[in-house]
Image (cartoon, rainbow over all chains, first blue to last red; front, side):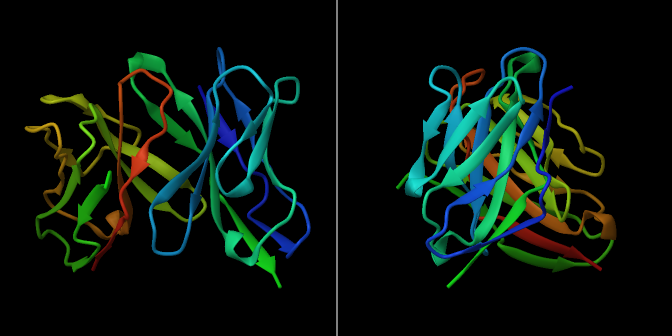
Length: 115
Length: 114
């Protein structure tokens, strides 16, 4: 069965420092991986996805993610954190079984960027 | 503006009183889905629909019903709500079914069942 793990409940970063939010996955077959962000009182917003090709994926708001097949990881990164990046981040893997577009989500990681 | 809308955004109700949460999308998406979000558990799929009149159970369907009579609407029905259904609910849509396109999420409905 497909699964996603986000090992950190919370990540604390100082503004201007690089940030990493970790995600590992377990899938049968090719992984299709996504990152979403949830701001307070808002729905989830798509950040980026990995389907195939280049292992470094660039997304919205200056975020990028590195796909590592040998480590089964898809960590979210940003070179310089902003206070406005503080939010809840979800990693997800597409479950294509049955031909539908179901997402399996991790538990989420709360990112706190301090001034 | 392309969007998924949900109503109501907040709802407090009592055990056993039937309720419906509406979801509508204006992007002509075939695929729609309902998730519930609980702390420490992420989002879990309740029901999904691949197109009009085609629905199926997700991972946590007990206590919920859905219908898909029109392409744009996908209401979530709780016939007899219980306190363990207190949660944050999200509707999502994407197109086409079977693709790798990202899903678009509604703003969420926070439900409290007393």
